[in-house]
Image (cartoon, rainbow, N blue to C red; front, side, top):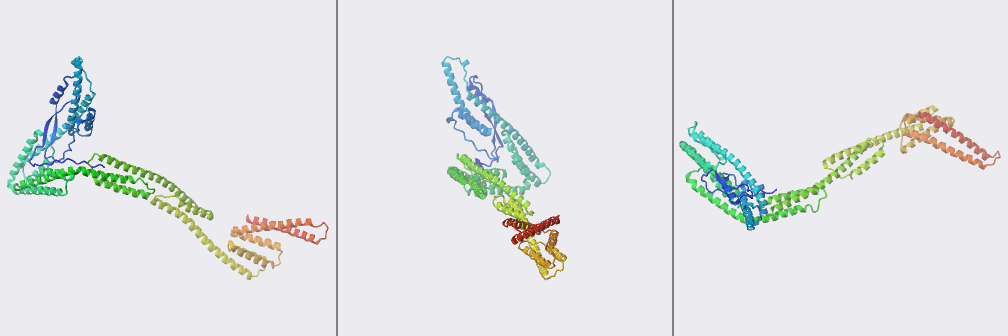
Length: 635
């Protein structure tokens, strides 16, 4: 942000009451006439004398600071087009009342050249035998000047019309205040009440703005006259007057002391503004005791003179100070530009760079306003460097947000997968997928911490739910298997010590053993040991082996179906299949071997082979019957 330019300070040096407003007549010139009007110069001069535009000068006791006086360009060094451009620029950029000297000076210089050009053309025309009545000379620059000047005059008139309305209103207010002050001595109430009323009226008077010059001296004299009458009326309350004088004295002493303290800090724009404010407040405070008046005024003048000395020194050193400030600001701009030389690749790097940029901006502002022709260029470089930094920073975070959105989508996809698998019965498959998902999670990339923590909690909760569940199921299954192993081991020991008197008892023992539960892994040998032990016990009963096998097989399968032991049923089906394949293979081998024997009967080897073939055929039929029995029991 560019610094405000210092206002020119013109402190008052006299506390004597002065008129409110000075109105003066300003001779101005209307828009240019046609080139055919003759003689043109005399018409312009007459127009300037006939038309008047009112201007307003600020009264000396007005506290508002004056605008800085604008420098008049060197129109003698400019050509007509450049001078017109300068006039147009000032008309567009500044208030009309501030550029009167510039416009009038430029206009006079331009008219001088245009008139000289026209007079030269006229003289040449007459020398060539032309008639003055027929002389025509077109000057577009004169028309442009007339247009610019006419617009300027219109704005100036509008300004003074508005100002006159304000001045008239202020005049009416101050006339009313004078009437109220005039009536105070005859009003009802105590002297103190009247004095309080007077102070309110005086405050209103001080807060009221300027009045027309024609009325300024009269109204100021009337006001002071009635104020003096009022204080004469209050002679009986002299103690109040003395107190007010003393208060005024104390306030003015404080103003002098404050200005003297400010002088100790050296010359600066703040000191010059303080001087202007001090003089403005001084005039509004009011009278002081006579014995202190001159000494107090001399004290203020001495402090004012010191400020003027400091201002002269300040202006002499201003160029050197501005040069050093320009160098300091350029150094800051170079540091800011260096931030984009090696661009950060991470969020933390950009945060650190932004912090450094803020520090450099604060350093730039602390250098202060620079009154120099280079100021605008430095300011533009300062803004350009910041825009470049912010542009690169925004581009980084735009890409970063895209990466974060992609990471967010990946994480949400993994969370959805974990949620779909957390209650899966496919322990092995789900476990493998979740482990892979955990590995993939580490590769998904960065997301903001607050949101990332929520996503991680959701993903971890789903994974923990699955693994805690299978761990609990595994522990429960282990405990259950241990109980089945223990009970079946006890049943095996009881069987070895027991005596079986019938097949029915054997079937009951087999069903009771199967009802104890299902064994897995290497513990399945307990089932085989029990079956072998039970077969030995039953074989001692003298029952035909095929009948015994069928009976025991049926009882075994029924028990497995009742216990819903799918592994046991699978083993029985496998046993039947394996026994059948084994028997058929042996039968096929025996049948092939018959071909090696001669056709003669009575060969003992042949008879033995034929007997084995019959035995294997019978065994195949038995196994086929067991398979059918097995299938029927499953329905």
